Every structure is written in C-alpha cells, then in structure tokens.
Length: 459
Length: 157
Image (cartoon, rainbow over all chains, first blue to last red):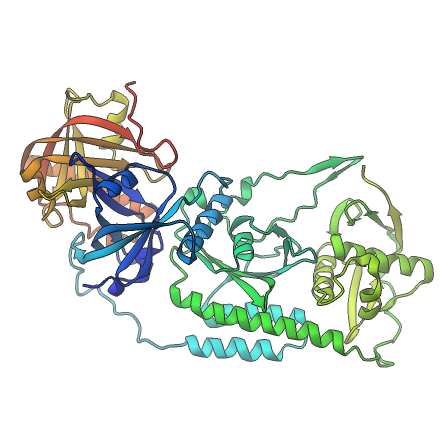
C-alpha cells in the first residue's frame, strides 16, 4: 500500500511510533518516536533533538523500520524507510521546530527540547500489521452517511462574520458559529497589542466565565509560537506531561511598594486538553491575532479542520481589518437620542468605589482588585478623570485617537478592540462602571455610584 | 559476558508496560514489533518475551538467523524507559503454561490503554495468543527515558 493511504491521524503523535535501526556491528536498537511527520507520499521526517543512538545508527546503516498506529482504530502499519538527509533550515525544519518549541514552551523546557535537524527518510514499503483480532461484524457500526456539512459550516461563518456590525459582535458570532458548524466547543480569539510583542484575549467561548484580557508574549506557549512563526500548529494527543501547565504555571510577580502587582489574568484553557489547534490571523504583512481551539478528545482536529480554519482565520482577519478601518473613516455625529442623559445611578449609590491608577505600569485597580492595564487602563483613567473634573460622560473615539498620551499607534490603531476589552473587563469585574456605545465612534461612561480616584506610584 | 538485571527493575519489566522489540535480518535491515509479555529468569541473567504469532512474521525468522535482539520497555506515565540488548538462547512456540504470562500482560496493558482513552471494544481485540517464546541472555541495559541522558548504559545498582 502507499503512504498516502494511511489516515493522517497516524502522523499526529497521538500514540508514539516505534522505530528500529541497526548499528555497524549489527546490533538492533528500538525506540519510541513522539512523532513521525508526513512530508509527501514517498517521504517522512523524524525530529532529531539529541544526537542519539538512532541517529548514529542511520548514519552508518540507513535502513529503518517504523510502526505507526491509528489512534482511532488501533490499526498498525509497518513502514520501511531509508535515511536520506538532514535539514536544518527551510519550511519542513521550521514547521517541525515550531511544533517542538510550542510543546517545550508549554512544559517550561524551552531550549532543552530543541530541534537539531529534520531528518528526511525515503519510504521503501508500507504494509498493515495485524495487531487486532478482526472486529465482530455484528458490532461494526458503519460511520453515518457522509453528509458533508463542512462547506455549509464555512458558508455560515463567512456570512455571519461579514454581516457583523461591530468587533464584539463579529468575534462572538465567529466563536458561536465555530461551535455550531464544526463542533468546536472551546475557542478563543487573541489580538496583537500596540507593541506587537504581546497578544491579549478578547473573546472566548466554552470556558465558563473565563476572563478576557489574559496576555501571552510572542513566542510563549502554543499561541505565542503560532503568533511569532505565523504558522498553524496542531497538537493532538497532548501527553499528560505536556498538557497545559496552567495550574502550575510559574507566576513571576513583581512586588513593589505596598502593593503586590499580580495583574496576570490566566489564559482561558482546558486543564485536560488533549488536542489543540491555533491559527494566525494575518492581513498583508501584519499579524492581527490568533484563533485557538482545543478539545478534550485526542486527535480531535484533523487536517481538513486545519484547512477550513485557515480559510476562516483569513476571513476573520479581513473582517476585523475592515471593521476597524470603516470605524475610523466614518464617525458620524451622534443623534440627539444617542446623546440622551445617562440613566440615574443605580441603588448602590451609598457605596463609594475607590479606583486607583498606577502610572508605572498603567494599571487600574477597583477596590483591591486588579481591573485592567496598559492602553485600556490609560483609556479608562482618562475617562474617569474627565468625569471627575468636569462631569463629562459622553466621549468620542476620535478624541481618544488624538490623545498621544494613550500610546495608540498613529496608523491602524486598535482602539475599537481595546474598548471591547475594557467593556468586557468592566462588566466582569466592576459592573458599577460601563461604557455604552451610543453610535459609531461615540460612547457614554456610565457610573453607578460615587467614585474616588487616586493616582499612586507603586515603587 | 552477560549482565544481571538489577533487582529493582524486575517489577517494572514484568509490570505490563509497553514492550518494543527490535530485530534485524541477514542484510542488517531492522524490524520492529511489539511483545505481549515479559518474564525475568530467577538468576536475573535472562529475559523472556512473548511475540504474538500474528505480528512476528519477520521477527522470528530474524531471530532464527542471528539471534540479535533489542527490547525496550516504557512506562507511559513518566516515560521511564530502558532498553535491554542480548542474544537469543531459546526460541519456541508457546505452551499452555506460557499463556498466563500473555494473559497477565494483556490484562494490565489493556487497562493502561483504557485509562489513556482507548475504548474496551478496541483493546479487547489486541492479539496476544498464540505466541512465540523468546529467551535471551542480557548483554547490556540502557536508560532510554527521553532527554539528553537517553542511551546511557544503566549503572549497576
């Protein structure tokens, strides 16, 4: 049989492959391989992370014997291969390396598990191995008839994202439709921040009351690696030791002054994720962000998912870009209705809300709880001060754009996405404050109780 | 010169962990297959592994040809792994008395696969019998836990 006839899930590393080689003296060696990469119908690649016995052997005797398992059916395949060459750069190397980096970064092993080379082997023969008794014919249930719903799903996502009127609607519709059309129950979108060095979570689905605003550095973890390399990474059958180590993630907090700075919002995620897939959203040469989905099922994401999600990521990237651009171009005057006076403060009025701003890191605390920082923190503080000094509650995006002190990039800013993040954080953490859109480019600051503002340095 | 299997390794080797077997033919072409049970001899100088007849179609002729064998044991939970190498001293068809080794192995190994998410409907179909019984004298033992230390000779304890 041909290599291309094997299900691709055999090459996702769900069940480690077996690999035997022979040394110069004729002594065999056998080992597990975490992953066999499918290169094309006549070649596979193995990752060389250490100069081990296997590598030494194939340099003197190129013959190798692989056995891979289908993680769904447990069918086994024997693949005879011959070592051909090692690659230390190029597309194959980069893609294998990004994968290893992502896993290493997950486990705090960055730099230890590092790809030395992508070792390319020619496939000599492929044959099935009868490791299982034949299935009891009475128990075999055929797959349900192949109703191809994928195209319908794609159509649905495209239609709905195109029709979204604002960023918030776009993102929530996108994640909702991914679940409806493709069954992806756990998903999130992260956008690149002003510095281009970090991503922040702006929307998530399937994580309960997961918080928005979690940040990931470029190159950090699966999502950060996808962002840095701008390539899709799919991880299937995440081993126990490779699973999201969020529970034990070392949190390096800076301590200064009388306050412990601990504004790290945990990234939404399944502690017991078995499969993950993350895709970059790129327009032109700019990275807008990352879409990430995960599942508790091993090998939940297949190659076609990757292909479909890539289409969706491109679509989403264009839609985001388009929405932000449109928003900048047309910021009409608000109608009289939109400028109606704010509703009277709700009944919590006797309680005074203490808000603190730490200019060192542009961090805002509500009471003792961390609220938001960076650009959204500066925006919030600017609005609150305007309210405190002049009683203003109506604001425009334009005036924020023109305020250089906020640090928004001069062209292609991401103000809209920052306001979405700020709105969501307020709704979750400080419902006494709200930013209510009152028309394109206009919004109102609603304050439900007396506030007290303090600015302090933290160290 | 043979090597004695350390006492503290015996439970691990007999404990139903995953067992890979490497052999080679007269032209030095390798073959890999799975073993379905292992037993350490009383004096700990020999190891016996069971190879299922359905999947050992190449391994058995290889062993008859040159007797060279490598057997790797790996525990999924922590990836602790060792590899034993040696020369076959006995190769025969399994008797009823050997079947208990295969069945004990199958029970533990099947449970492990079930725990990592393999449905029973699949694991119960794994073939373990009839088997060949392969006994070899251990020449060398290597640590194979993934990482920079993989491949080092296991120091005598």
